[in-house]
Image (tube, rainbow, N blue to C red; front, side, top):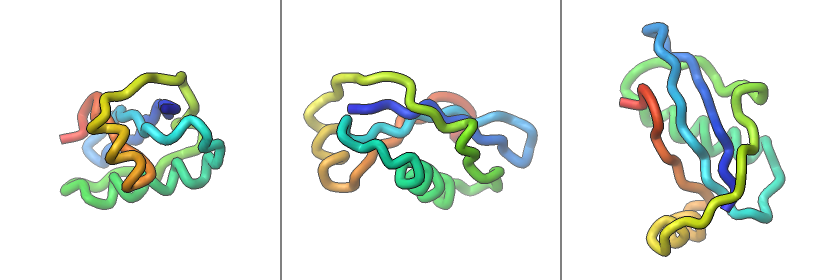
Length: 85
């Protein structure tokens, strides 16, 4: 799977860091950003919008079967790294 390293400013001044995992064949950055926006829309706190400068392809990674199943069903999977709660 492809890992897109993503950073978004929160209104409280903290910086959120999360990874967006998508199939390795996906190269449509706009779609990856759309997945990130969907993730942010479910957060209980306000954030800035995702910038294409702050959402970049990082690397390829093997994922568990459970995560792969979610990616097949939903198109993506989010790994929350920092300040996502």
